[in-house]
Amino acid sequence: MEKWKKRSVELITSLLFGGKVDMNVMPLYPQKYKVSERERPFFKRSLPEKKGISSRRIYNMLCELESERRAGVHSLMVLCDGDVICECSADGYSVNEWHVSHSMSKTVLGMVIGKLVDDRKIELEWKVSEIFPEIAYKDKRFPLITVEHLLSMTSGADFAEAGAVTERDWTVAFFSSVVRFVPGTKFAYNSMNSYVLARIAERVTGRSFGSLADEYIFDPLGITNYLWERGPEGTEKGGWGLYMSAESWAKVGYMLHCDGVFMGKRILSEEWVHASSTVKAISPESMGNFNYAYQMWVGRDNREILFNGMLGQNVWICPKNNIIAVVTSGNNEFFQDSPALEIIRKYLGGTINDEVDQKSIRLLASKQQTFFNSRRWVHPRERGGGFGYFMRIKSRTAFDTAWNEILGNYVITKNNATTMPLILRVIQNSLNSSIDYVRLYRVGEELILAVREGGEEITMKIGLYGYKNNLCDLRGEKYIIRALGEAVSDPDGNIVYKIELIFPETANTRMIVIKKKDEGIIRLFLSEKPNHRLAENVLHRYRETSGAISFAADLLERRIGERELESLINRVFNPMLIGVSTSLSDHASILKKENERFNTESGTIKIIRALVDRFFKENNE
Image (cartoon, rainbow, N blue to C red):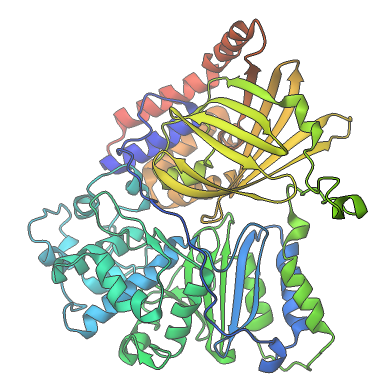
């Protein structure tokens, strides 16, 4: 088994079952070093009716998106003929703040490569091994891999995304990997193809990939509010790691829709636009309704074009109706098999021959203002009204005294959890940390949450009447965290305390439920969006592509049962922590007893660890 695969499985089993391996197998380094600015709107805003589209159609689309439980939409922007006819965001998000794009980044990377091809600095037929002659390769088929194979995801190289959190030298690991088939004969989606393209761009120009992206794409489009994370070799990740707003992505989509021209200026050649948006590889039906071109997707049955990123990030271009839709989300999905995208295509991808309905204009305007309110997990309190509040005799945002019951300092039992959602921790290589204590206190009319993790304290204001904005440093990385809290009664009349932490620049949200167990003891139930369903999808995907991982998973399921494995995954993503108040005289002994329970491995866990260790010793794949 290749080293990176072994490390990936060890990492997964350590997360699930606890283990000996250091979960941060690659040293932690800050990747997200700044937060988003607030952009000015760029595109002209217009009514749908001016484009021959009824506001009722858009309203119905928004209603269906909101009712589809699998579609956790953060922001949506729709353009027709270059004007914005719909823009809306769930509370806490904005079309004019950047949002992680994941694999939509590949499309910008492909455009940079296209410029270099147009300038004759790169040839599609060049062999990758000849561009990096100093790096040794192992597989005899590796010299067959060309630049075009990387662009079309047909290289066959096996070193994939999972290796990003287990290896430091990505380029060498890519060259050292097995080539699963003759390059150019099959489609195999792999973000490391994109990363190597970024490295090629640097090699042939002698410049950083970031400076090339600035010159060729961002500067001509007037995009200044963005961040592209770098890998451990110092190169932008290429295939992922780009943060841009929905409106900035609309610029990229509109430029491509206009055959490479933006605001009268040519950005990409017509030849490259045509070549990069023409099908080069047939993707599996399970991945959705699109085949692959050069770092973007093309409709199987039509000329629709798609930039797609995992967890529900999409730019959809429908030339037939001159429509571009940008959607950012937090969904349990990898590719473009997306319920949200299907709803958008249903309403905007077919024949549009609407009768103008003026009465629907106000209806749509209201819906855009309240988009996704029915899906709130935490509800803000209503502000006070009346003469007393008008005269400021009474406070409009009085503290909710129900929170007084749990204010205090709590030491937390041993755990593997943090403020940052687990999926985000894996992506950002920030796994070796845990919550030490939680402090809830009041300052004036404000509720404050302080969490100590990884040796540092994070302090956040928790809004009770709306999200409070917090700028937080999480182990050297900068994040906006918007927080909202609510105290509600459960069916038994007990108070349940809910705190939602939105990471609006990402696809991820942390939810915390606090329940009082005994006097001075609380239970914290942590969950997140996207959630454990995504991890189950990951496991399923690797079982399909790796015989070793499939064998290991089958072996575990036979010994402990499929349901038990699913239950373990669920507990990792939704842990329950115990907090013991330091005001209790015997808090140390209570804490010790709870920690002993955490340290006691069940027979099942011991069997699992033994099986995993044995598997690695005996497997020679």
